Length: 193
Image 1 (cartoon, rainbow, N blue to C red):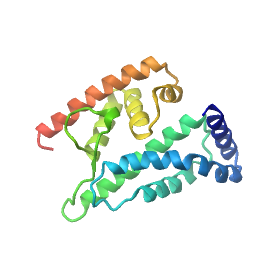
Image 2: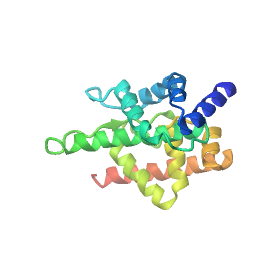
Image 3: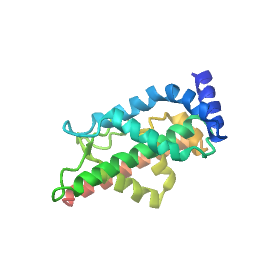
Image 4: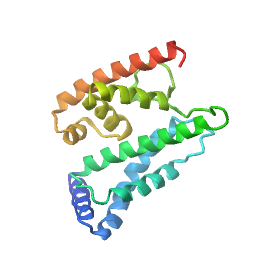
């Protein structure tokens, strides 16, 4: 794993330096992990959802092309950026769907076991995104921890590496962020939003 992680980091740096071949070598190394993360997100969507896992990955790759001159720090940094992009893609899709046909149906996202903030089986993706934006206004690092862990699938150590904090800080932020999100999302449900 450490060798593969190091190889990915080297390919990311080469890609940042303009080596197009590095992207071709990088793609098969990260595809399976990105597909697993996308599948996890899509598993929480409604069954009639028109965006499929592969389409989410394809859209992610299209957006990553614009990131070719990013100074990629390492594998965790790359997957953190991918988490942000997947979140944006899903939220944009949900907002677009919601705006169609007098409000259309809003896409639903099931909060997995890692981010269980309530016993409710579903949480609205748009509401979650809005809550994360509100959390970021108060404490950006806690919002980033949720984004990296939940949307990016990074573990505590990888999240700590991306944010340049200790694993203990990540765990503390993770617990506090989950409690804050639980309060925000349940308060929003009580208020009828």
